[in-house]
Image (tube, rainbow, N blue to C red):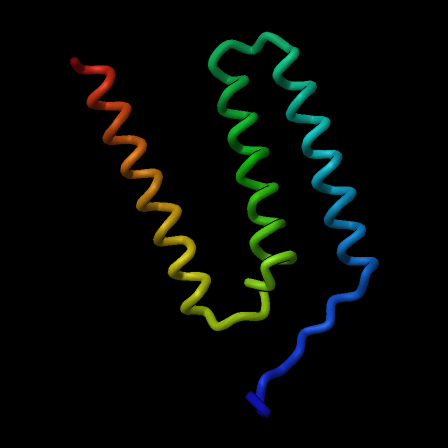
Length: 94
C-alpha cells in the first residue's frame, strides 16, 4: 500500500465534466422533444454513451488505471451490447 500513487484531479476538471454532463443532458432532453423518427433514439443513446464515458474516465478514475481495466470495461460493455442485440433479435423474429 505504500507504493500507491494518488491521482489528484483539480476541482476545475470536475466542474468542467459536471457542466458537460448537464449540457449533454439538456441536449438529450431537447432531442427527444424533436420528432426525428428512429433517429431520436439513436442520438439519445449516443449522447448517453458519451456521458457514461465521461463518468467512467473522470469520476471512476479509469483514466489513471492500468490498461487492463479499460480493456475489461470495454469487453463488458460489448458483451452487454451483444446480449441486448440477441434479445432484440429473439423478440423481433417470434
